[in-house]
Length: 297
Image (tube, rainbow, N blue to C red; front, side, top):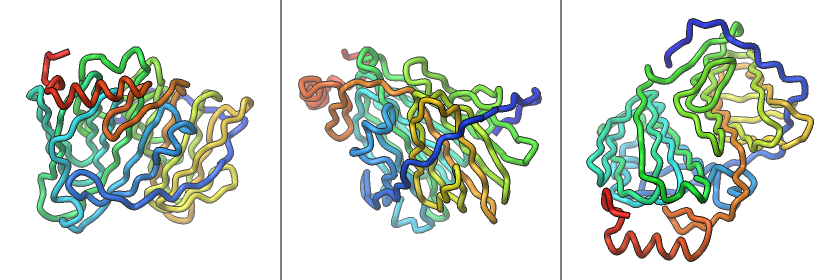
């Protein structure tokens, strides 16, 4: 995290959002057998539009992650991979390659289609991180693929007077702009580290869907306790202007994620997310016929 030297802007929240419900997530596996927790599942896609999925993975057992995610296709959305610990090598069929390390982020726009792999580059130790899927508006689903790697030092961040450390992966917080912005979905993606008893406020547009995922310790949001490994979906209220998160008796860590809903139909078949069944069938046919190759439309 790179700290800004500028004076922070205060986020004033007069009417904080309440917690609608807590979600535990589902234990599952993906890729070649990587064990993970699917926090944002398919039934929640409408409620948390424009977000399609959030996976959390954390293990110090190499058997849980060494097989990795061999070559697989994507079309129609974006992926944001955030590594908390460990190293992951990624490659795609356009010749791009990079290494995600502690605190790093890969932001990938699948667009009209690409094939990539994500493979661990370690044989022991802790592997921990998150992958978020962010939908693309229909008009952008067939755009050219794009991606960028950010090291931990590349990611903007700040520390509040209360000692809360915040990494701004996307959006804007306390006057600090994140590594990535998107006009259509206006995503906010913060990693918040709270000392015991600390308080953090973040303004949010009332029409944006929002949730917080607690991955260390316990926090309180508008009087509701949110324990570790729980996602707190925040109420959408016309008069609410943000969220206030309070740390517990021990230090805690929370992802705060919000975005402008697209309000479009969602048609998904595995790694393809389009607007209609016809578009899904075309995606499958294009992949089968080798049209996910670079510079092939």
